[in-house]
Length: 461
Image (cartoon, rainbow, N blue to C red; front, side):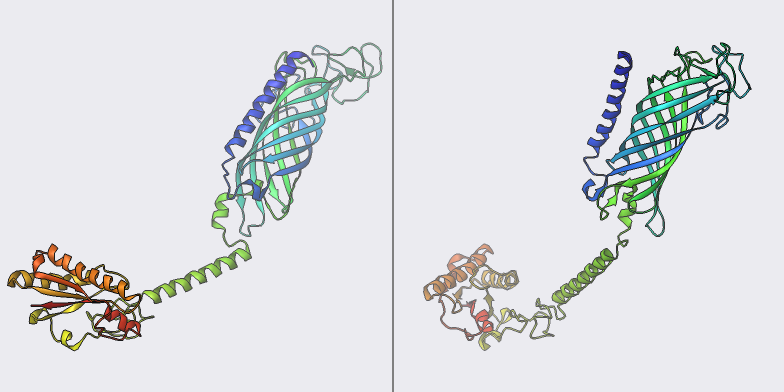
């Protein structure tokens, strides 16, 4: 193997490696769910088949005859593969083969009188052939049972082969006649001096092929394929009537591929992401889990509906409403029951011009509720129209210290005063006073009573 051949081989191998690692880098963003770690990605294969010096795209054999596929003799061919799958679309494969390629001039019989050496046939022994191939998955088909699958693929690569061509003066590849030197035997060596010399030549080749795999189990797949091998050799079969024309050959093979790794993981070779997306019920345990989740969601939806249902529209859900069917618009406490105001207050309202309903507050708060705005707007209008004045008496429930509640009640009275002033009422017409826990209108022993005590009473003068 000379320096030029070594250089070509190194460059070719670098190009294939670059192609593979570029695809590997692209596959760092997983094209399948969960990434490659959940799949088995390594496999080894054994294969055997036959060779022919022809290809499906046509061409000539080494003796210048235009021949069709399988018109020449066939030779045996067998080998091993090791493959790493980087995604459901691409993998890199290291392939090694050995065997024989046979060709002959079927227009001649017996000793030939044509050609540079009078050769009528040739047998090329492939001592070894190794290539690095890019394997492209063309499509994976899942059947109804979703247990078996068919995978179509194409491959292309670069390789080096060690071969030894032997030419014969007849087309039977046998020592059956005396040669023209009076020696027994029909071997004619195109590039060698003596019969029996088996020094192998080295040459480059490009394998291009297609195939199909049938998944037999989680570990084993049947692999069938066809490969055309384009060589960089004019002497693949020895000296040729084709001159410097590069020779080619093809091989048809069948074999078994074994996926390595834990059987608990699926083979990435037969993964179909689209099928995986729609096949959520393939695994019985997953189906049960999905059904359980659906049931939990249904239960939660029912609970939410129950919590949000408010039949009487009083703002308290039916689940917590102790006084259902409260008339619309009735002020209620946190349990949904009507708030009972002092009789004097209940008998007077804005239309009577004497008393207004107390302004209620949340626990430990002096912030006005939005539902109080309409009452205060009416009060402000009356005060402006009549040039009246008003006393605002603030109160608190009994939680906390007396001093704290005194300040809180004063803040509540001033919050109402500020609203009236902002509504156009003269500040001098409004008197705001805090009385703390004094004058409770209900018992501070219950929450219902404490709610009523958190108030500001309105007294128009």
